Image (cartoon, rainbow, N blue to C red; front, side, top):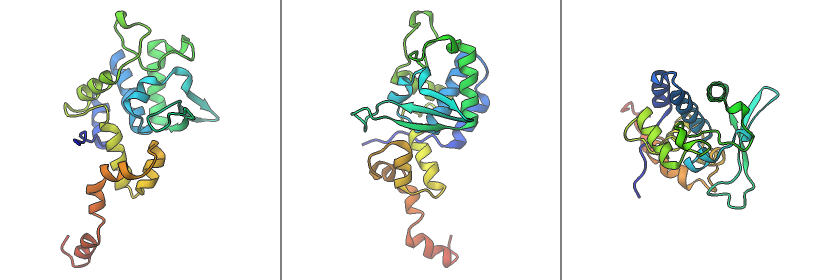
Amino acid sequence: QKQAAPVRRRDIDAALALIGDSLSALRDAALIALAYDTGARADNLVAFNIGDLVEADGVASIRVRRSKTDQDGKGRTIPVLPDTMARLRVWIAASGLEREPASAPLFLPLSNKAKGLRLTRRDVSRIFAKRISPDASAHSIRIGAAQDMRAAGFKNSDIAHAFGWKGDAMPARYTAHLDAQDSAAVKLAAIQGRV
């Protein structure tokens, strides 16, 4: 199975530094930042409502109501980091979403014809490809964030828990090349001064 090209934090930072301040740029920056923080699948990103985003006691979080690995709809709450929350606040204020009901989509198309609709998974892929890299797909940020976590020393089980995988098989698949760098052969080569 072909794996999507990963988008790592360095790619995110480079894209966000160049993104601009048009309404679509503000939306796309918030979407990209939230995708990285949460590791949310494209289906979840486009399903987020305004009311899923909560700020209380100085802590921000977003509620995933249902996902591919949660068909019962138990949901889970994911932290939203301060820099991402700042981007979300700017997008919400600029788009007028603070006047919308809690059930309104957090990310929406900006054309008049699409008023009241949601972005689609295809829109997410298009935005990532436009703003980050032509090779980026809807799944690229999820893979890249998992690789960043593994490179930082987190176990695949920790990554699975953070991003809502049922087991560590998928994170292990996405981070296999990083795991190879942690092998006994590489450690021996380091001791021998060969790396």
